[in-house]
Length: 121
Image 1 (cartoon, helix red, strand yellow):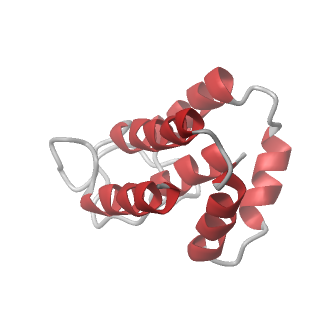
Image 2 (cartoon, rainbow, N blue to C red; image 1 turned 135 degrees about the vertical axis):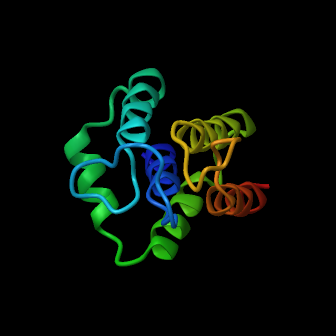
């Protein structure tokens, strides 16, 4: 669950300009990112229900609290699984183009991924 939550949190970071079509009702997450989350779910966490994911994601009042809970849940995870978390976050970040950034990964996304990487060490 923490893998999906951190990945989706990267997708939901605010950007000044979105180059891809936004997910209906979203101010930042794109359809491409949503599709990538579906792929990650199917590949890595097929047993997690979307209802449980939505409930867990909404439980926290802030992104900081959500990330903190995910990091706490991952503290005893294997290094291999922690790598999968970071790879999933990068896949989401790379799924759509924001702020006309040619690498697809915005500075906000890269900063967030870097913070999570450091916290998982």
